[in-house]
Length: 405
Image (cartoon, rainbow, N blue to C red; front, side):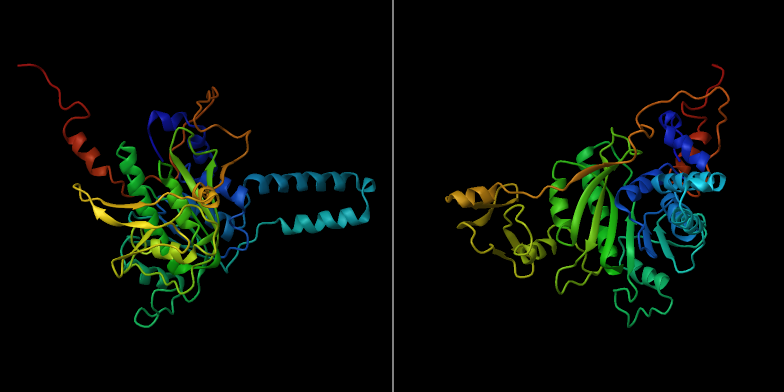
C-alpha cells in the first residue's frame, strides 16, 4: 500500500488496513463483483499480476472461506435483524415466514469450500494466502503457460498436453499496470500491450462462457481495443469502481461469456496482438457481429490486402516518405453505405459502487481518537527498494550535510 500523503488522506487506504486487506484495490474488485456478480458459479480462478495479493485475498475470503461483503453482507444483516424480530415476536409472522427465515439463516453461515482452485501469478513474490497457489513468473513469456497449466492440473504433461487447459477456469483477473512515466500516450500503449499478454494467457485457460476482468487506461483510441475484445466475448463493458480515483485514467474492462472464433487456438509462441492475428479474426467474425467500423485488413501470412465483400473500390497501399503504409478508399456513394460508414460500436460505461460510499478523490477529517495502523502486508520485494537504499547511503533526499570548512 502506498505511503504518500495522498494515500494517507484516502479513506479507502485507511479502510483497507482496518478491514485487513493488503491494498485498497481490494475494494475495486468487491465493487465490480457487486455490479456484475463475478463470483457466481465460480470455482476455478486465475489472478494475473497479483502482487501484493489483495485481489487474491478477496478470492480466498469470498470463494474459499465463504465470507460476504458489500451488498451481500448488508442483505445478510437485514435477514439476521428480521430473524431476531421473529424470535422475539413470533406471533406476528406466519408459519411459512418463520420456516423460510430459518432456512435462510442456516444457508448464510459461512462454510469453507474445498472445490475451489485459485492460481496467482506475478513477477514479484507474493506472501502466502490460504488456499492460493502462487507462481512467480512472467505472463509475457511462453514458458509461463505450462507452469500455469501444471498448477491448475497436477496431471498435466507439457510434452503431450499442448497449451490448452484440460480443466479450464471460470474467471481470469488482471489488475496489472506498468510503472507510469507521466507520458500518457506511452503509458496507455504499454498498458495495452500488458493487456494483450494477459489475454494470450487467458485464452489458454478460460472455458467457453467464462469471464475476464482487466485494468485498462482509457485513451484516445481505446475504443479499438473494445471492438477487438468484442470478437471473443459476448458482452464487453467498461466499469469504473467508486474506489478508483476519478482523476485517474484507470478503468476496468469486464468481458462476459467467452466465445472464441471457430478454429481459434491460443499460444504464447504466436502471441495475439495489434497487427498480428486480430485483423484476420475480425474479418472472419464481421459477418456475425454488428458492424462497428469498416475493416480493410492486411493478410499478414500472404502479405496481401483483402477487402470485405460489398465494400467500395479501393486504391493499392503505398509507403510514404516516413515509411508509413497508407491505404485510400473511394467515398461511399449510396445512402445506405453512408449510414453504415458512420456506424460504430461503443462499449457501455458503468460506474460501480454505492453512491453513499467514500469518494476516493476526497479527503475526510480523522476522528480525534484515530490511530494509524501499519499495512497488513508490507511489500516483500518492492522495485524501489534499491533506490531507497542508495538515497539513504547518500544521506537522504538532499544528500549529506555537514559543517562548512
